[in-house]
Image 1: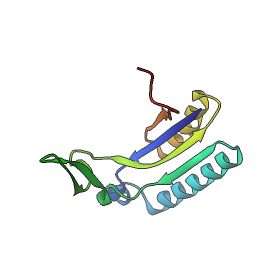
Image 2: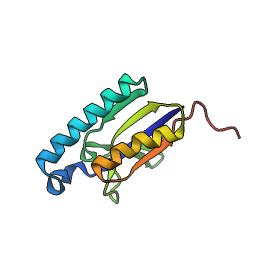
Image 3: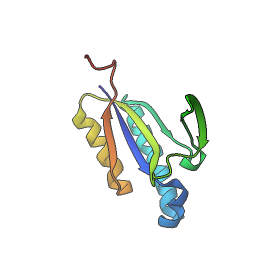
Image 4: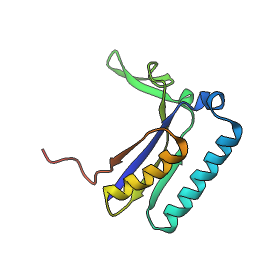
Length: 120
């Protein structure tokens, strides 16, 4: 089963809340985790995302799609990166997510990746 493990954060302000050494350690942690998951055959994909300040939000204005700069104004944190893992069980996905949480000391979200839309 595939699961997406999502890490959220405010990348623009990270240097105000975390030391440069911690950020370097986090990047090394991410590389190590990716290598471990890849070696175990569990890593389907993993990516860090550009800061949300570079995002575009596409909405509807006067019946037409319109792109505007940035994420929704009320969001303080946005998706910072993710892993898609292909594992035996939800318990294993949570085990991997727990490893991330133990390092970053912030919650992450674990959600199953569906193979098809739900039956109606």
